[in-house]
Image (cartoon, rainbow, N blue to C red):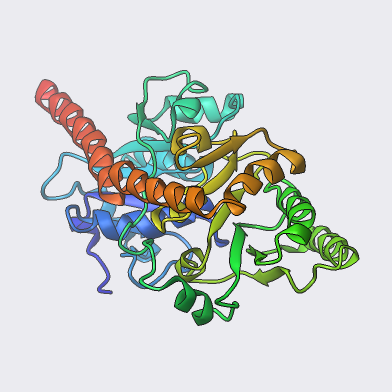
Length: 361
């Protein structure tokens, strides 16, 4: 992709983290979509895919001049470090920036974070739950996903075979980083309870295990081996792209103990897969209980197993829930809707900046 010209940019979406995270995933999906309507780029370590427009640090001197088409350039931060960089560039270096922050956190913010948020020109929250923790005016804009990329397969059996899984088995999946916070152990324990009496099902755990969580993963594999299910509960590691794995599923489980937002249930639903999820993050705002799947309290393998059992054991219910999940995701969580709502926040910020300029004259 051609490097953008700093002078032309209307929006910068920094990504200061090298490892894949939910925030990084949002930028990877959203920025290329936003670039269809805005002059936008990301910046930070060179870890993003080639389709994400990116401004190198050496081009930053061009940010001292406002874009040709706007009174200011928006710096859209999603982490504390990115907010701080924006504050320094705007207030210390006097760059013509307006600062926007997206918060996905569902906890009481530290004094430092509250100070940074207070320096923003606009704040976006990713769910009503998140908004409740903010002490400043904010706009709720829930995440969306690319419903063209995440979509049902033409042939489910072929989708399974394409990724090396048996096409004649039903598959329950749990995707995301393998760690206690993500509830991977809850999923494994639930599947250990269910699979012995559901011989046509297997389970798949897909996701990265970082160094400090290797023993956690090892313990889970030992647990599976003791249950005699090592050929039916599979740890397949991290995969990119991940959408072929969603397309192969018949049930998705999001067993998190804590989550900021959580895109995985949306990605599964957009592929026509029913979901069992815990009542954390934005999950209660994403699922429709009893229609697109089930919601359960976090940390309970029994609750996950009970909710999953109703879907895994009843083919007609599973198909109906999958159809409702697909329709719900497409109607309410398409990426274009998120992009439009964020753009509306940008436009409001630019209008305020224009009024300040007019008053200053």
